Length: 115
Length: 117
Picture 1 (cartoon, each protein chain N blue to C red):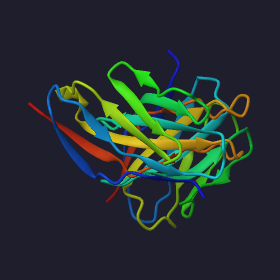
Picture 2 (cartoon, chains in turn green, brown):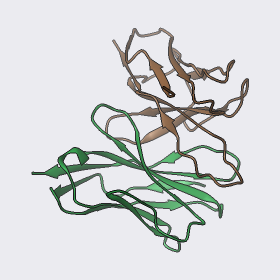
Picture 3 (cartoon, one colour):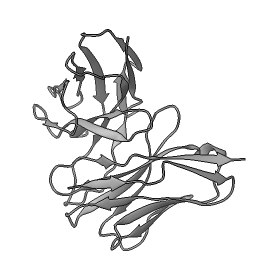
């Protein structure tokens, strides 16, 4: 069965420092995609970054990078040079190619950036 | 501008009432989804649909119903059978995978906050 696990309910980081948010996943399908979303207090879901199971290199999007370790089934989000506006909930999600085309989400990590 | 529109933003329901949450998208996406989010928790899938007139139950479908009569619209009805409906509801849409690569992200609406009074 598909599953996403985020073990950090909350994290603090000092402004301008880097932070890693953990995500592990489980699926039996060899073709899958991993996604990270940011949810500010307004409630909207903002797509940040995507990593495909067949991608050879780790994905990067500006200050966001994804540390993809396929053998360990982990897809950690790294935010470099944290900003106060990064304070939000962060969700890891997965979609596989089993034909169900649904997105499975983790429970999220609440990040607080300190000035 | 293309996007997903959910309405209303806030909704209040009396005990025993059915209410319908609207979700409309103009992204020409085939797949649409409804998620429920409770405070401090992740998103749980209620229903999803790949094509018009077809939809499947997610993990927490009891007490909810949906319809997909048009590609653009996927309304969610919270029935009186849902015992604890107070939550934040998010609608999303996406393309179907291409070439067996599940590489397209879901686009979300702004959400509807439902409160039972």
